[in-house]
Length: 114
Image (cartoon, rainbow, N blue to C red):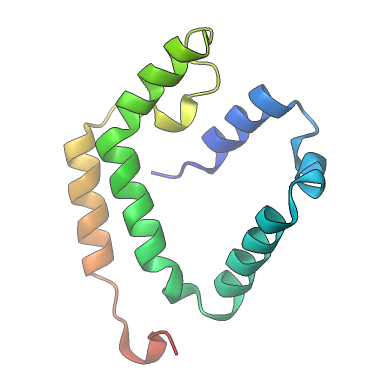
């Protein structure tokens, strides 16, 4: 289910091979948001669970529509810039079920957000 490599592929397509250095030229608000997410992921990673869960459910629910709209609206070559929304070999329903089961199996205990 990992999307990291697919996201990087899309970023390389849109921003070029040096996309990571372009992040430094992003607006301050974007850089602050990225810094905040990185901080939370280091200090209280369980607090990102609702964020990740809703992102995944949105991608699985509407990703195909987004992929189609982006491909046609931006006249993208087949599969370019939208690999984040491609799920090979497993149905979206199966992925949703598997992701929900994984989230439900997490033992929170003392790891709750402060």
